[in-house]
Length: 118
Ligand SMILES: [Zn+2]
Image 1 (spheres, rainbow, N blue to C red):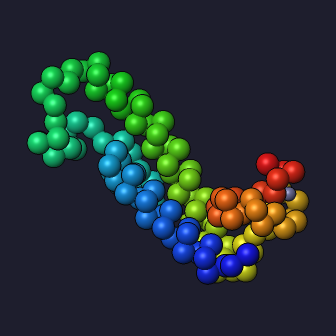
Image 2 (image 1 turned 135 degrees about the horizontal axis):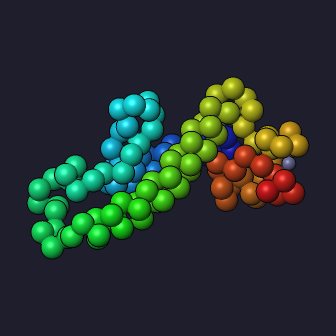
């Protein structure tokens, strides 16, 4: 395993995740590091579709909420992996403390469990 490559890969993933998060979320002022789903009023005026009605907006918020939660979880895993690179714990399974299989960690650089603990 090439740790520099893994790190570069993780940093790229972090950037992409942040971009995706920014499309649908805004920083939550009451939760540092957290995000909340944008509402119609948060979008730039030219992004707003006038035909969008209340029900559609509610639905959009629900969908984006689920999506945002998923993105946030992935971002947290990526940040955790980057932290582990810094403190030398990268590539260790969180559950059994064994080494995560090279193939698994190369396919998914933010994996935090080995194949048997998955
Ligand atoms: Zn394990």
